[in-house]
Image (cartoon, rainbow, N blue to C red; front, side, top):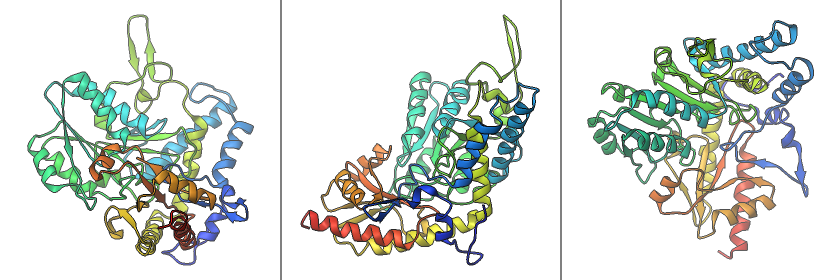
Amino acid sequence: MAITTPSTSTIDVESIRAHFPILHQEVDGKRLVYLDSGATSQKPLAVIEAEEEYYRTYNANVHRGVYKLSEEATAKYEAARVKVQRFINARSGKEVLFTANATAALNLVAYAWGRANVREGDVIVFTEMEHHSNIVPWQILAQATGARLEFIHVTDDGYLNEDDIARVLELRPKLVALTAVSNVLGTINPVKELTTRFHEVGTTVVIDASQAAPHMPIDVRDWDADFVAFTGHKMLAPTGIGVLYGKRAVLEATPPFLGGGDMIREVHLGNTRYADLPYKFEAGTPNISGAICLGVAVDYLTELGMDRVREHEKELVAYAMQQLSEVPDLKVYGPPAEDHGAALSFTLADIHPHDLAHILDRENIAVRAGHHCAQPLMEHYDIPATTRASFYIYNGHDDVDTLVSALGRAREIFQL
């Protein structure tokens, strides 16, 4: 699937849209404006066809058969791992674990690494802007082990509070969990700098990159974090496939989380020897088609160029923030465009975000409304919810203009 671009630094949105069948539909003559990629991205034809091809032509279990179908499925499954390894610049495919999603990846760290390493009195730190999947596992771990939770709060303009960072560093925490990019505020956190600072006090660093991996180049070696989690369905792949990157030495020293087939070397009645990395953490039949399709999605993004993706979205978000600033009674949350990812959260006067989302849906505009699995952040801003427009490679200025026009109609409906 060829991708055309008018220059080395921009994306031809119309060319991209042609690859996404779902974007071709209309409702009452209004084209679909999909602005919920922060929840899940749409899928290009190459990914859709790859999944169909798997089930039509070489559906078989991996790692277990010596017949042609199984060998082909295994080869493509493992090729996808190598693609992900290169995409994130991991040193080895042994450091790339396939999981069900980012939530499963973070829980793997909490249960496998956490239960083996966290003790009563240890300090676990996470930030106020985390998605619930990077909060709840650590709360469960703390309850199980007697560890203490500490928090890094956010400033009103959407950045991590530096005083809190300095305070928790003095506590020499056992683990810190950080999002690379907030799914609500769009804040792009200085992951490399924060990892360096926490490593200096002996802290293990876990990064949730679910809102980063689809939108910008990530280099796990440069970040130097111990664990990095992200999910496939936000980056053009199907649901049900995710990735946990872990430093090889850390993974080698971590016991497995799930036991069963494929994660073993030998099983006897009284004992088991585990398989080498990465299979030690991949018990049971995996999501084979999902992993293969994730590899196809990585191919698509790699051909497009993650630098281009980031520049396109950076310019688009700047344009959106400017246009939204002209809508009366509308408030955008988070930092300015230069420090902002692809998600924009806002409120419009006293219209409940759910009501606003329904009005936008009448215009065939898909946005997300709610607390976005980030209730502590809603509590910080003393609001029940926000409306969120999250952009991706198939969005352009025309989508922003359509959104702004529809927000104007919402103001008329509510007689603002």
